[in-house]
Image 1 (cartoon, rainbow, N blue to C red):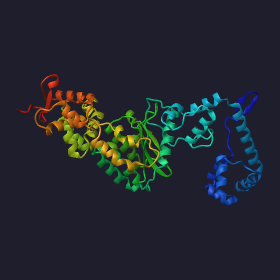
Image 2: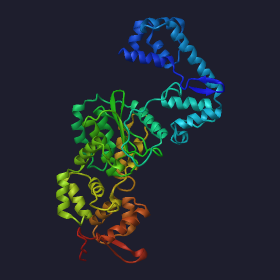
Image 3: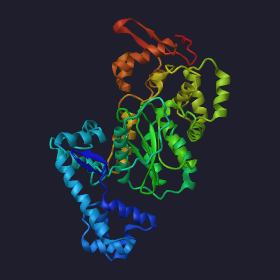
Image 4: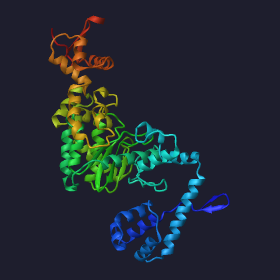
Length: 456
């Protein structure tokens, strides 16, 4: 109970519809069952349960007969609920109502992302927020359908977490997915691993997952959410959602495969994963980590490679190993960095970013993946800076023997000045290219793989 002036009022205004829902669930019924029992339209029962329609004396008699209660109880409950709603509306000032809304969701961030519209009137703001949450009243906040996060070092903002999950649910509900068959998950994992070797692999992930009955959503992380991916359930189908918090190709693939691993391993319920913090002591997270890591870079192959080349993990050695096991070099390099075999800064510029390529699919409210895939593939192959600018420059110089001007290379590969300068410094430092001339007359050509100078 709470005190308002000299009056004690319930701490929570319980709607009769909530009690009806509990009674239905306790009996193993559905709303359709109750409608048949009471000989009332399903729509009427649904509106009563949601609070849109009030309980009339006739309805109270029907509920009493169905549940073995008194009609007076339902009428009194309805009257108290409506009275309390009227009191709350009268007591809450605009400031108080706005404060309550801001305590539920990060309103400014929702407006910035276009999830709700900016408005000055509190009535309109409350209407938009309830629509976003999919509820009729702020008293009916949806429960979080995910397990506790695995990080212990950062405290997430529950408002941001709620907003992110709700946005994922809305987008996932608009997708058309196939029938989810757990027995097909192994095949799905194999398809995704094959895609991980391709530069344009990320843009095809959605099609593979949806065909297998798994929703796929990209919603960038909100401030103070601190997680990389999630598995939630919407309408009986699992949904894999990624935040792209770390804009790296290796992070994209590991996070994706980690979430798929949860499904294959039969881990129940939804979950939010902060892969930066490590699995801690959670056995299910450890299990998912190990499975995802093994899919992307088989442990036995990695061990053999490390024993052969340690401590000199050259770019050529890493790229050759990646090619031998059919994986993208960035995935192998990311694994070596994660396991501590090479520093985080080692060849870091060679790990492609994914956000630019996946931009057409981020926060998409409609099912337009298939329409946009072809355009995204073209973007990866023919537009903008290459996925691996360092490798692209080196391969270009190797395919153009002799001395080449910076302009010829930059224009061909569409490199900006900053990327060009960074790549050239790195390639010169490791001896993979050589330079002649000074200032405006500078030209470049490739050395061989070992860094030895090419004879003139």
